[in-house]
Image (cartoon, rainbow, N blue to C red):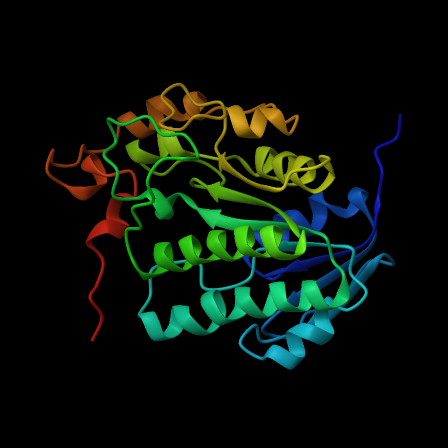
Length: 267
């Protein structure tokens, strides 16, 4: 049976590293793929539309969302930065996006949350989606806010969201911490596809992680969406373990959020 296709899917942050992965990977899931980023980008395929949009501009976001049946929201600041920078795209931006979804009747959002929502938990802990949020910086705070916005807009207006607490989505894990948090590009795409098409998700929080040997997070919620990770960091173990070890008291060895727990303050 052929999977259902979304008539018009909006992908924000389409020029970013993960946005570029999903731009290609999500093409089979939508009749039309509307691409957006802060800077202009070009539609290169017949099924693509491209619209430049600053997420801090409420009117522009409202126009961007018009006519879209679902949204994959990858846009915004993706690293730890001063609060003023995070505020514009990640806090104002997520509010503008959900307001536009409410106004235009868009009923499904996949929100790129982050493991940095729970970054101050120790690496010795095993967490499920109901674990206490312990953001490790301004970026993590913004993603925690985004999860609250998603819950509010579902409770109040029935907009369903899967918030994916993305681990470390890179071509390969770069250090020992990432051996536990790594999410392959293929598994990212498969998880987003399931989050878009699964029925009746309400507001579901899942961890975005591949089938790594030592995972700190419960993956039952993503399994309930029908997601089965196909990749593992284990193939990189010898390469990573050949790197010099970090000190036992280094945040990268203590906390799930790693180095983010020690960044800032800025200014």
